[in-house]
Image (cartoon, rainbow, N blue to C red):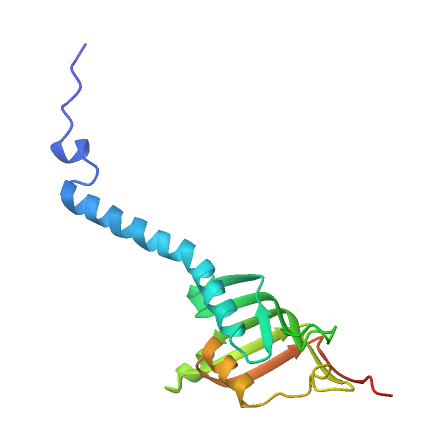
Length: 171
């Protein structure tokens, strides 16, 4: 019976070219980046909800946020913006999903632009007997909210299965 040849020293340590300290630092960096990636959607959702609640006379809520870093995008699920006084039953704006993404075709032309796709968006204007029972205003404050949520010029907007509704409850 012959003895097996001794393994070379590099075969005993699979990462022979990396010191133990370097490997630990790399694993720590990977762990921190993974933690940030996991926590980011929750932090973004919290920031969006805070921003929506700062709209005068309205409040808003987002259900969930998905990040797709590989395409430079994030997706908001179940967004709803309602009048705070509760006298208008329909939300001012609601959507099942809004997708904000970078317009890659514009990046090739050295322009930083975005694409927005709204799925099942509903915009409800209501004229009531009083100002409290009406929701008719869509002024500059709403544009500021959109700019805060995605601060890039919009090059392409798609609304899928959406509707705009006007109701006059005074008649």
